[in-house]
Image 1 (cartoon, rainbow, N blue to C red):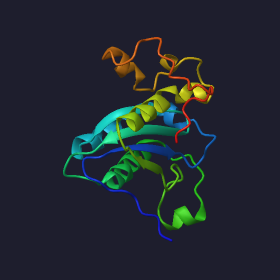
Image 2: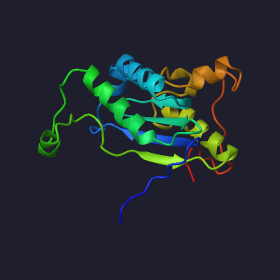
Image 3: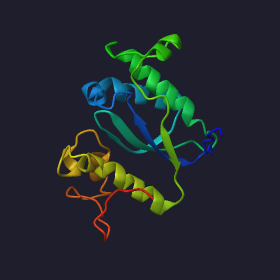
Image 4: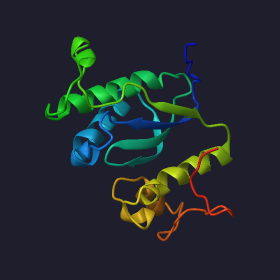
Amino acid sequence: MRYRRANIAGASYFFTVNLADRESKLLIQHIDPLRDAFKKIQHKHPFIMDAIVILPEHLHTIWTLPETDADFAKRWRLIKGAFSRAIPNTELISTSRLHKSERGIWQRRYWEHLIRDEEDFQRHVDYIHFNPVKHGYVSSPVEWPHSSIHRAIREGVVPPDWAGDINDDGDFGELR
């Protein structure tokens, strides 16, 4: 069975994108080239970045695409490529990647979820902002420097002491 992605122009999507080496700290070690890659591709192929968190070996983000465009795959391919070209070549490269002239930085695939409604959108934004706490990097979301929570605080969307909405069962951030 072939996996099919939901490609809907103007829609919002939640993404999880991982490095091939899940022990790596490459994304935060090279945060400026990663930010530059996003800016460069966002300028050429516009989209709204509603929320993002960049962790050492993976990132989560929500994008809203233009009303006439559904091609998030192209954007991810270009972002990954721009970042890969901007950093030193120090990673191990498998034989299969060598044959395809690929670097060994990113996992080939990523996970996307079509946002269904406002509640789904907010739950995913909260998940993104709470993710550094979930992984044990910080004790409060505001302590993590590579997160759009800082923009949300500046814009008055969340208070500076925001720590997420804990569900009644004590489970936070597990997406349904």
